Length: 322
Image 1 (tube, rainbow, N blue to C red):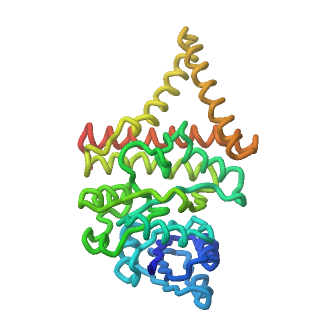
Image 2: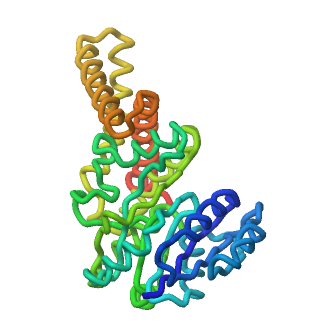
Image 3: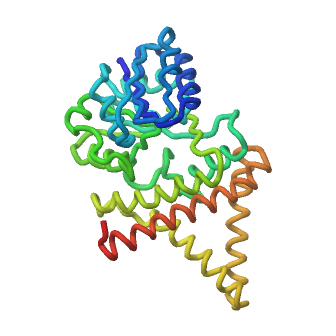
């Protein structure tokens, strides 16, 4: 099995350097790498070229059109039987391709997704952000969890498709705002077999501070409404949780401001929730510092997503604006 690894890139030369280094360590060697520079102002060509003697690697520069169409560009130039998509801020364990190859040979998946986690070298903030994106107390454990809720949708930070999937679907039709989930739903609808490979984990850096993390999650909340516009049945109860949590926080603030009798109940519920996050994160990360930061990251994750979700729900669904 020959893999084509496709990596869209936008103004992140240091990240692509780290990612490419991890690919030089792979135990399975039947693969090529395609880096698609999507109109970046900070060009990474020299860094990519420095790996020419270590990897079968190709570099392409194109005008900026977003990550979805950058991946399509990579599909068009790929030689592999199977295409693997990574985000540029991922680090890949040395046995990743070996694990994927063996699993695909046993299970014959047309498309797959894998989980993400925090590498030991990540900062405390990055580990806290990773926790908030994978915790059952925030996302419900729907991202790469064996017991995920509903139909499994691979995410583009760690996703693979067969050449046949690309040829029949035509790739991404959205370039951002939930493009990977839309693509996954369309793959399902065409009868292809999609599955989770639990052991095919990547270490996902995401954002390095909570401000950037807020902006990213606000965008994700808006993306969920964009997916709803294409597939109304894909809006589930779990997707409303961040918005309800955000409204609950606002209600708690109002009740406390006016010393309402229900304020004490709200405060108790919040205290329980905070303690659950703290001790769960501490158990996973073995660090009180990361556990404290996980509380902040979880609140940022939920409120940012909730506000983005409500913003586009109000604008695009209720008032039907484009």
